[in-house]
Image (cartoon, rainbow over all chains, first blue to last red; front, side, top):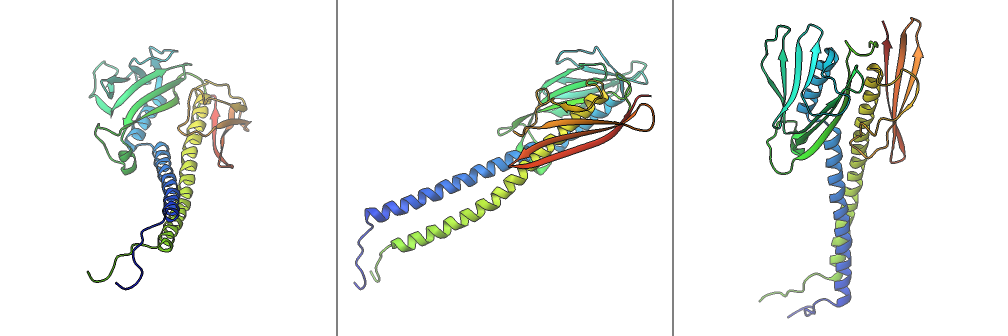
Length: 178
Length: 125
């Protein structure tokens, strides 16, 4: 054989390498933690487009309403019924895990029911004053769908989000206009 | 066997690990900038929501139309850990019953103050 004979590693060498690997592992763990924080922050800050659409629908209906039927001061999970200026009624209610919107014209004829959102885990509303409706809507969303902005199916890895919303009635309640 | 096996020397292992470490530090720096941006994005969304809630409260007369600090964070919590404070300024306009309403929502993210301002007009016919 030419060259140095194989002699293995000394304890000091092994300890140095292990210490460096430990430092690397700590740095890598910090990276992973940062990545998860980043994903969580982005997911929380950007509403799922479907949820944004539902909220816009709720806002439009509540703003257009003349009054809340069976207005409740305290939080409740009953259907929310809005009386429109033309006498029509818009009702939001939870059926299983679906938030459903139903309409009824002034003559009492029911329109087609719309499923606004699936995966709803909580539906609470109240009307603390006649001109305001507060909503709490809990729903499950897959972080993937938030990032890719598409629909999703119920499955593992879904996270729960809650929307805390307040909308004022333009046509009823208080006398302010905007 | 031709040749011989001697493994890595300590110098080679340390050099490789040092390079790897530098790469991780650089990547962490980039990622930290992105995390900071994401936190600001998250806080900004909370500021907008807080301002909207205050504005809707004024519109629906859940709150009187007066200036000052308003704290509704207990009833309408944000999604981030940012502490949001809101302040309303009401300015009467030339027409009777017409007011300019300015809602400011503020928070501090990593020593940097963030402000979202919504200005609108309200009147009572």
